[in-house]
Length: 375
Image (tube, rainbow, N blue to C red; front, side, top):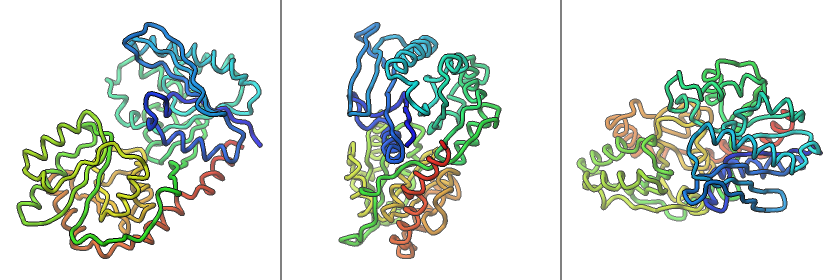
């Protein structure tokens, strides 16, 4: 069995046990076909410290190595991360491993062109990040971008969670000169699976959950619900999640006078999300862009159809039998899509939706893809 050392900058930790949980789920599944250990290597902002080191053992195979610092210069964080990475690799006896698997390239591999001269162990890389699509929200002339682009010019074999993300990285970096494979995010089928609805709701129930930021673009959707309300359409809208933008959402709902139709579910555990998906008529997604959308895949695994804009990564696993696409991502587009679903909601075969999703997201299939690629 191959011995793999996973290294990530983004992972559940003692300060937030749900952050980047999709990386943990990927690691847990890959570990079943390899002999694996994981290092969480991160420089974390801490206004109380200039430089504080912490090592936290999360399990027999998962360890966090942290520098806590009030430094917020991205260049200094890159440099400190590079030294922390080298130190943890040496401490973990990286030479005993057949392969180093990095999850999320930046800032861990900002200086990989130098690191590879010291670390000779073969390396692969996994990416999940939508930042490539948005040029990391920076002007194209920003020097920091060149350091990120240079990572992909080192020909590191790459795993992405969608064809859309692979295309983003190729266009961002200006190169296709690396081996690559698309392996979807891991969905926990012990939690997200089809169950017959105990009670068929008399009126349509819509559900959406997010870590709420402006990029999730929920306001046109809410405006469309207000239009439905004005036309006498009855429904329930359940909004889960948390984040700075949630107060803006609540304020907008109140301005639209639809608060009696809306229920806020707060920060949800995955079992709570799964239960809601089973009881929900349709799952909504309003994002401007996604690299995969784990929650949409979770919804389909529960047999819950989707309504949202035609985002390429989601269209890789969802078609006309599973979802209704917005013709336009505005109030009118949402109104038409919601009414189309309400009028045709009984035509969706929830059991077949779940079967198709779980075939695409089969754990055995993902494990084979991964093992073949690293081999």
